[in-house]
Length: 347
Image 1 (cartoon, rainbow, N blue to C red):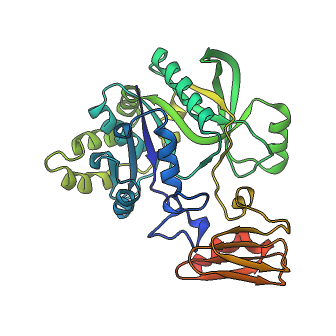
Image 2: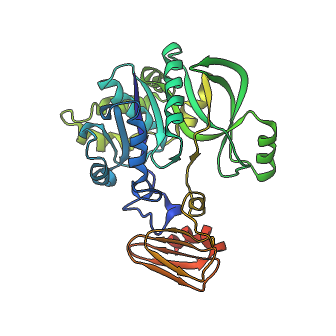
Image 3: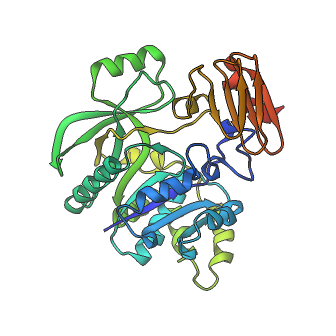
């Protein structure tokens, strides 16, 4: 069977002023009628029940998680008292899943990405699940078929060694590549065999625990001592021991230590929607090039971006500008300055 661990502890600072420390990106309604984390859960419900969905998030976001996911079992919210990077979080999450659903396969994924073709996404996960049923000590990562020479993502390079599962060619990973410059990204696109790294990976929970015992023993022992969510004395041990775990990414702690990583190519309209500019690809656009969400009125205005949460925003005779209306701030500027809005949080 397949379970899911949704990573929902990030702060989404690039969507400031809408995204704040109190309500980060994953809890915002950026596209469509639901928040990013609600959309993530809805996709997973196509292939698994709610009791097999787990959410790892910071202590200050527990109430937001409960509010937005009221049907999620209380024990499926895995609290991080402090951020210790992804390795302790993933290992601890796998332990919690293993306690309830022994030897499950587990998909680990971010809470705030956009996926347009949900059916294809689910089929890819099913193929990964089937592969892991036959290869228990393996990792499957989802590689996104690149559509442009993107410099904002890491890349995955595949080998020619492959296995056909559910009509998907699952190939061994040769290496992971850091975010490239533009010329290198163009070269990857021309060569083929490179995929965007979406941060979605699958493995069996027993294998996760085995790797953690071997490569991060001290942290593993502390996490084991914390125990199962809702067990007696759990919260006290959690807040005492979790901050003592090593702060390290799952890539450095585990992934770089093994040669059992495979990749499934995914073409399901994935986007991490990491910046205000990225929303231009998905928000409605009128005949005059105005991209809008929320309450607005435009007259004799062209090529503007308007994002409002409550108040109506009016553009009269204005071109190539943007306006972001949030609870505590209204930001207005020329469109070419949109990518710099997040820097205002440091002013």
